Amino acid sequence: MELVLFDLDNTLLSGDSDYAWAQFLIEQGVLDGDVYERANDAFFEDYKAGTLNIHEFLMFQLKPLSQYPREQLDAWHRQFMEQKIRPMITPASRKLVNDHLSSGSLCAIVTATNSFVTTPIAAELGIEHLIATEPEVRDGAFTGGVEGTPSFREGKIERLDDWLVSLGHRFEDFPKSWFYSDSLNDLPLLERVTNPVAVDPDDTLARIARERGWPVISLH
Image: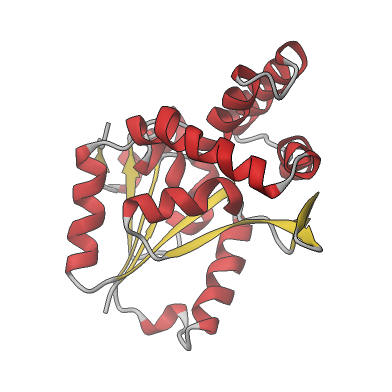
């Protein structure tokens, strides 16, 4: 069996679900557009530059989840899926996922974006397993905090190893492993797998992929 891992934002999606969720809430009048749009843009630029402080970002990104009942959040998310996410999923992305699933590979999305936003997206793509940043929940409600290690940079490796152990596996059990990503932030995991693939990569990752002879593909 092969292990196949996918980044989500700007990889399987032709956009960023984290960024789009905040923009969606602004458009719904849930968040103050002047305040949140500036902050959202600034965090997104830091992410693209590889300088994002993940803990500061998560305080910003998860706070709205703590301010509304889960029923309301779920209703907004259904709209979000229809208006923002499904248009970001290209036929090429669906084909790549389906090809690996049909080959019998163990497939998972490994994303820094929180699981509230990404669980329905993974289901839409037909991927059972999701490794995502976990929002803290108490008494059935989001607190605005994070549970455990964020699934970001080296944290993706820690979370991946814990997930594999939960399934009775180790990373070393897989003779071939794949990771598809667009971002320089995913270099730690790209360097670990046997088959790293750059997908519509940022400039830094594109340069590294050329230097190391990694495949570069486009899904968008």
